[in-house]
Length: 181
Image (cartoon, rainbow, N blue to C red):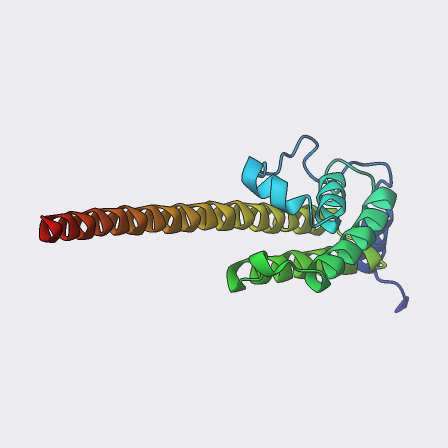
C-alpha cells in the first residue's frame, strides 16, 4: 500500500530534471529581417533599438542560462522602447507589434522560471517571439516606406503647385505686356 509517489509522478519529475542545461534553444542561424536604409538611418537615432535588436538575436542558439539572462534584458529593452517611442513611429500598428514582442518575451520568461520546464514549450515560445520581432521589424520598414511615399507625394504636389504658379505668373505678365501695347 504505497500511496505516496505514484510511478507516473516520478516519470514526470525525471523528465523535468532531464532537460539538458547545455542544449541549444531557438533556431541557431535565425535571421531577422533587415531594416531598410531609410529605416536604419532614423532608427539609429532611437538608440535603445540597437540594444533590443542585439538581445533579440541572442535568443536563438543559446543555452538555458544564457536564454534566461537574455530574456530579462530583452524585456528591459522592450520597456525602454515603449517609453522612448519617437513621434514619427508612434502609430497603432507599430505600438501593438511592440506590445506583442513584450508579451511573447514575458511568456518565455515565465516558462524559463518554472520548476518543471518543458523544452518543447520553450522552443515554441522562442519561435513565437521570433515571429513577433520579425513582424515588428517588417512593420517598421513598412512605416518608413509609407512615409517615403507620402513625402514623395507631398514633394510632387508642391512642385506641381509651383509649376502652376509660374504658369499663372507668366500668363499674368503676358496680359500686362499686351495691355501696355
